[in-house]
Image (cartoon, rainbow, N blue to C red):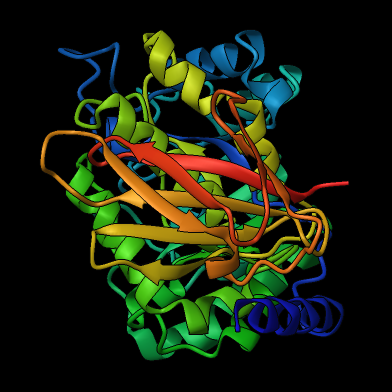
Length: 408
């Protein structure tokens, strides 16, 4: 059954990519970078908290870290501003402009700095009358705002949906994409349309014509509960979501919170693994100036990133939701019979759990058997025939993340 699902999904995705996707050449693999919101929110107090406030200094420092600490080379090349960067009013011509105290040199100068580091700059707008933080919205200024951000050298736009009628989004987001394309500047377009429309209550074939990525569900918070609620929602709705993901158009479960305050080491590994399985955009929201070595090692794991960035672009699926509270998620990568498999432990009983299964039970079919290798530490479990038992030990709220590829 699983192999039939994979084969059908591959055919659908390839057809979908050729015929109906946004034709701006961007996001052929899930985009990667850094986004301010989860870690820094709408902190505009640069008097008492200059180190953490939303300012050009913050983004220049994060650009330095992305460029100088090895992140850029791994693919984390977008630096994204979120809400609260604007002045509270437009100028006399109706143009947006940055808060002059916190961004004294303007967004164009910041973009130039980011580009000088070999990075790309993303920015935030809201389709409604106001942004979620109460700053000017774009609903009456779509063309003007598209031309403004293109003139600044912006490379990615996240367009939120606060203070807007959901019924207007079916024309508003496509119009914004049209106006950005008319500028001649390639701008990766991240839409919030489905998140406001109930997640699965949108026509994804239309959405993929106009957006490179889209938020589907609730904002992530700095907690394991928030992470698991998102994972559950993606699993429960995978029959709608998985077929529409692929090169140029991705479901976005929101930011990586690895390196922030609440996730344990094992929970951090689990979020990173699950985002890779889901073919999700990888946007860190943390403080790169003080990130721990443990969090850095997770976010910089080359094998996890390689799975995330697999060119086939297949979104993984939950294939077993076990009564033992261990879930099995599978993503096809590289070739017909190569898979990334995440065994996600949802148990909270305080000790590792030994989970045993056969690859045949996952509907793997190679009669030569499979080599199984841990993605995080390169531990080789060995050669497994379809009926050979494989046992993995999974920490509470943790994951075992493996490659399974056919033996030769």
